[in-house]
Structure formats: C-alpha cells, structure tokens
Amino acid sequence: MKKREKKIAFDHSGSSFDDFLEEEGIREEVEAVAIKRVLAWQLSQEMQQQKKTKQAMARDLQTSRSQLDRLLDPRNVSVSLDTMARAARVLGKSLVIRIRDRKAAGVKHRTHRIGAEIRSR
Image 1 (cartoon, rainbow, N blue to C red):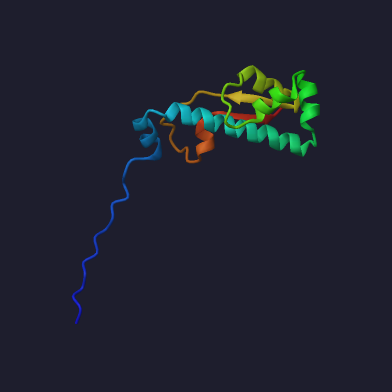
Image 2: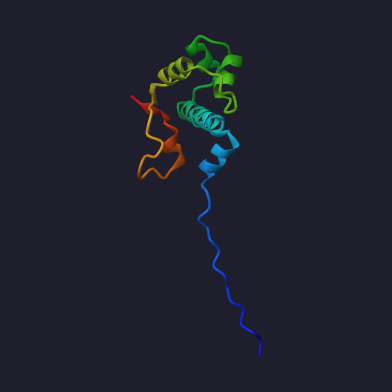
C-alpha cells in the first residue's frame, strides 16, 4: 500500500495587485494609463456607433487628424482634460471626473475605481 500524502493547503491571501504596484512605485502611472485607455476606448466606441469618421471628428473639434490620433491613442496620457471634455461634447456626451476614497467599500470592478467616464448628457 502507498503511503497517503498529506495535502498542505496553499495560502492564497497574498498582497493585492494594487499593493504590488504601490511597492514598485508605479501605481499612479499605471492608473493614469488605465484611465486614458478607458476614455480613448469609450470615445472610439461612440465614434463608431455614431458612424463618425476621424476626419469628421477632427473637423468638429477644430483640430488636426494627427492631434485626434493622439487623443485616441490609449498610451498617450499627455492629453488635457479640456481636450477630452471637448471630444465628449462633440459626440453629445460629457466627461465625468470624480475623486473617491481609495478604500471605497463595495467597489469590485476596476474601471469604477479609476474614476473617469464619458456619459450621455
């Protein structure tokens, strides 16, 4: 007969991903990129839904196509809030930015913790 091996329960209670980012000193940078990715995606989705081309969007924003490409680039975090708000307005939306307690109870989904979104008016 084989000896029964005693199974050891694995402890899954390590630190969170947010704790890891904090320890690495990159949490703010990662969150900024995440916010920009969400906003760029939302703008792109709304443009697609409204069948608005980049050329038409740039014209409505009174800017160049290359500037619009920077606005829609999820990795470019240097776009101003004013520019994001103007783009949202052109699409009939509004940009909502809020500051929340970092330890907000009951917040499970990451995009809600980011604190920025584009909404219908």
